[in-house]
Length: 154
Image (cartoon, rainbow, N blue to C red; front, side, top):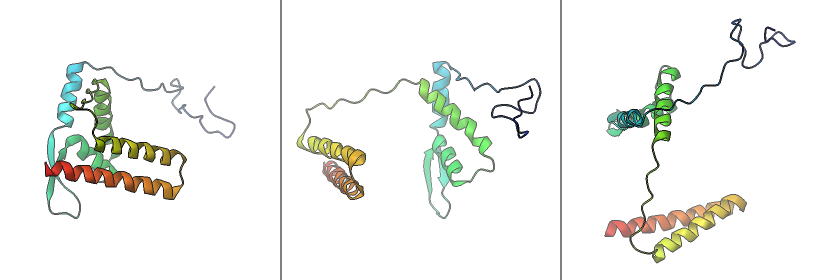
């Protein structure tokens, strides 16, 4: 009746507080679209940060700053950052996905090369050995650099 096992420990999901028993799973809260928009605006506000060991400051979004602080251990308590991150993630999940841009012109030779390299990379990741994967990654990165150089020359 108390939720304790044979060893005297409480079973997962039970607490020592009588009457509470199993803790319910947290239910997802639906939020109005306007509230989600406001949360996303706040999360995307630009803030200046200085990374440890560097003198220069750089501008990132508030959400990115919170995630970086959590990842690098610069926060005194995880519990102070996690609710904001969870709120932004739930607000982002209520937003409609942006439409993928459609190219104005048909695929060019470079696009077809990139698609072929991507298929080769996907295949190597699923079925290849380590050298095959490394070769596929190197080839894909080489093509991406080539495309970036061409576009920067325009």
